[in-house]
Each structure stands twice: as structure tokens, then as C-alpha cells.
Length: 137
Image: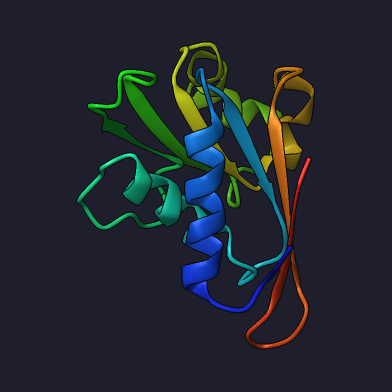
């Protein structure tokens, strides 16, 4: 899909979360500025999170309680600054992955070997200043 705006990126996130019937891990791949955080904001908005959702770059994880009966907690993980698998483990990534919650992970490459088999993967690629190619697989 080609997204021409942040609103379209958030709409794709909305469609994805509405299609889920159980908690999942959503791994978000792409360079800086390609729309990963905008996508997570769309997930959060769809889940009823009213707080402003920012990427947890310096704290690694932000967790939000949900009213959605499918998911109790939404974990937003950003591993951009994690320098190793051990650094990711030190913030409890394995527990988060096994928590039975909805988890969105920006920069998941460092923990690829820990991701569950049924992880939803979303790749973001910059086409130009306003367009992004977004693939879900």
C-alpha cells in the first residue's frame, strides 16, 4: 500500500488492529522518518488510548492499560537505542513478548530471534517526502 499522509498510515493501523482476534506482536521495520511511530499512534487511537503516544526511545517501553476486551495492555517498544540483545533482555523484552498483550515494536531487528512465529511484520519505505510504501506480512 502507498500511504500519502499520516492519516492514511494511521488508517492502515486501525484496519490492522480491528482485524486482530487475539493479542499479537507487531514488528515495525523501516528507516527513521518512515512512519513507524505514526502507525503506532493509529494503533493507540483505535485502542482508545487518549494520551499522546510518543516513541519510547530513551525508556524503551511504554505500556497502556486498555478497555478493549481482546487486549488488556498495549506495550509500545522502541529498540532504536538498544545496542545488543542483552540490552533488550535487560528491559524485560522476553516477558513483554510472553505477556499475552498487544505489543508494537519499533526497530525489532536486534530481537528477531525472540519474536513469536505469528508476529505481524510491517515494513515502511520512504517513496518521497509525503509518500510511504507500507507492507504487512
